[in-house]
Amino acid sequence: MSDIAVMMEDIGRQARDASAELGFASAEAKTAALLAAADAVADSVPAILAANAKDMAFGRDKGLSPAMLDRLELDDARIASIVAGLRAVAAQDDPVGAVLAEWDMPSGLHIRRVRTPLGVIGVIYESRPNVTADAAALCLKSGNAVILRGGSESYHSSMTLLGCMVAGLKAAGLPEAAIQMVPTRDREAVAEMLRMVKYIDVIVPRGGKGLVGLVQAEARVPVFAHLEGICHVYADGDADLAKARRVVLNAKTRRTGICGSAETLLIDRSFYARHGAVLIEDLLKAGVEVRTEGELLTVKGTVKATPEDFGREFLDMIIAAKLVDGVDGAIAHIRKHGSQHTESILTENQTTADRFFARLDSAILMQNASTQFADGGEFGMGAEIGIATGKMHARGPVGAEQLTSFKYLVTGDGTIRP
Image 1 (cartoon, rainbow, N blue to C red):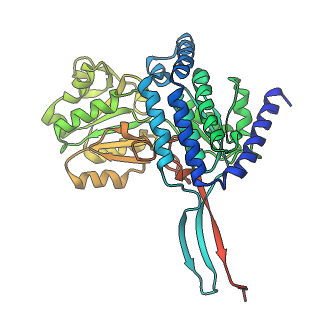
Image 2: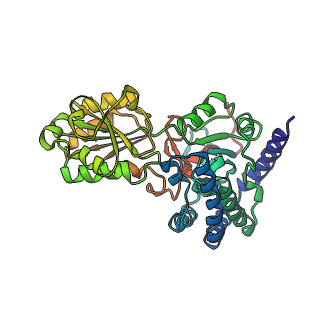
Image 3: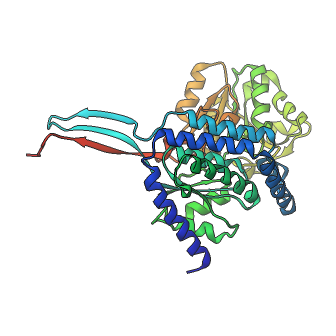
């Protein structure tokens, strides 16, 4: 057995032991741990910024794009957001033990279905160090131990944040091994995690298509898929122009490196006939490269799209744009090229919006709102581990509730089956 395998075996065993204790920890203890962790992060701003500076230098040397460097960078405001997220998760109701349903049977049995932790969760993610705190907080809240494997670029930032989370556990008297991070950049550790069926109950990959594809192809542990965010915005013929301009610009440019960033703009031909290329012109003025085809290529500043651009997650100041024939044209395009992440329709026609909502099956569908809201924090979850695009168990933003399963508690009174 290699040194990496031995290390991962030890981490897995400690996580399994910790999960057995954390699974029945009181709501008060978990809340205290989260609040203490939030205080530790707030008190460690200089150390976190110093660690992040090392990671930023590593990322630049590695040749990361500006958008990816933006994902990696921490500043005072982003650290304050991490603190706020921890406190928001702490303030939520504890999902563990919640009664989902209960009923009586003619046999005399009383049956309850209650939430229970999954056990041990493995989270594999790329460059965003805030995921360290988000994932740890949600796993703790839901009574799960977690093994974190962050991206090599965010190693120092993530390890510093991990120290804050463990400090919270220690302050609350909870097992410190409930939150662990793989202490190496060696990729062999990822391969080991994917095979740890003895210790890990589910893997949550959070990153680009390459990472998620690798996990889905090689994992022996069940996976909550967080596939690429090929998010579409459709400007319908009945869209309000001012709203459309505001939403399209925000959906693409607010932060281009997150999975909720719009990657394709679909424009109804009737909208284009009425308003011209204003949405594309706004994007061009903002510095976005607009890749398009056909009639839209006559718009000065656009570039010719390849077929692969429709269905590509750019994570950059680039967007694909296309004219479509009404809402059904938009639906057909999204069904063909989307990743079932997030789509937004811009329209004042509720019948059209209802059709868009009914006939698409993406995890998140929006009306007159920016796709940048595809975020657990914005959904009131405090934080998220990711946006699950699969259809089993968890879907959409994965918060504390989504990290639980359930069990049946059955009560009788000497009841026997005839």
